[in-house]
Image (cartoon, rainbow, N blue to C red; front, top):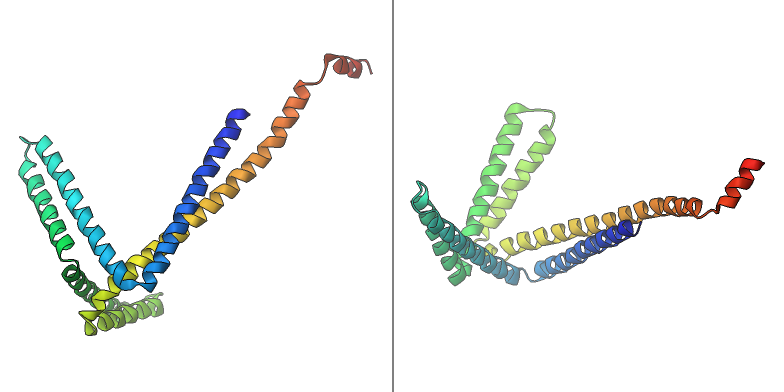
Length: 212
């Protein structure tokens, strides 16, 4: 019984930690939505460091696997990641402009394909697909027409929204997990108490019941 109580408390602390992390992510996402320029710059610097660290780790793995058939491929991929990370860290604004242009082109092409596909196929989800295509096309045009100024807020907005929704998801998991743990603990506690009570009955009471 004591082990189950300790496990329940450990699980509750773990879910509380998830909820706290989710709250921090929600706050960071809301701040990023207010200061989208700072969020864009921060996301680019984080992206650059991730590329740089990933390239260094890949280079170490390639060195450890020298003599194999994929040694040079690992070295080339790691070198490209390191070079890209250095470029992104040194030129975050230019990287943001290039990625914003790429995102706008993705929105445009995705919206056009959805529009054409919905008109040609006319499936059961015709209206929803048509709406998605129109939204993607409109979003791509808005980002493209405002480029390069749109690079100051588009990526930061996406990055902040990702933090916000991830934080809300972690809060939901943490709060729901704590409720489930408390419900399971409440259901198992009376059973354990009843079992202890039956074990604690003196043998004289059992003898009296048998005589009656």
